[in-house]
View (tube, rainbow, N blue to C red):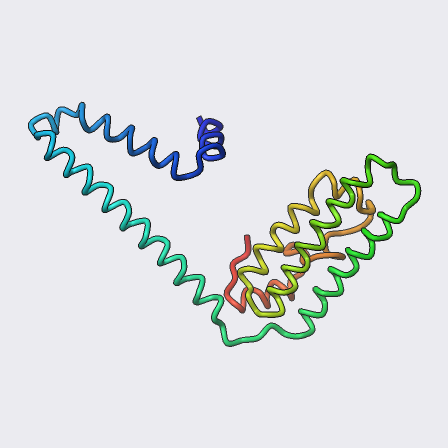
Length: 192
């Protein structure tokens, strides 16, 4: 059943699944013996009330999430410059390693395009992460770092990066960086 919902969300998005659930509930309401004494217009008004309350609850949830994000994003503390420089140098090291790999003459023609795509993804993610870090947008930086970790743990990464290379060498690794974790937690960003 879980696979069904993953496919449904992938095909129709969350709004399609929501419409399906509302339709399913409405069909059940019509057949419910508790509501059999109500007229059609009363049932319709009840359904409208359900939709309005659901909509208001959703808006309240989004507002609360936005408020919580603004509390973290609007911190007065600046990230220490040495941390920003450390991350920038790690990102640059990853770019250097991938550039050298792209210049490798022994690389087959069919491997060149996937490597180029991997390199472009790495450069884009590290650039966005670096910009977020420099502007003290820790939530955005953490999201970009999460995407970067998924890229670095992919099968392509194992194929194109040296086997002895650690994630810590070219990105932030929460498992190894106790000092960096303390900095991030002090700023109010929760670890995944």
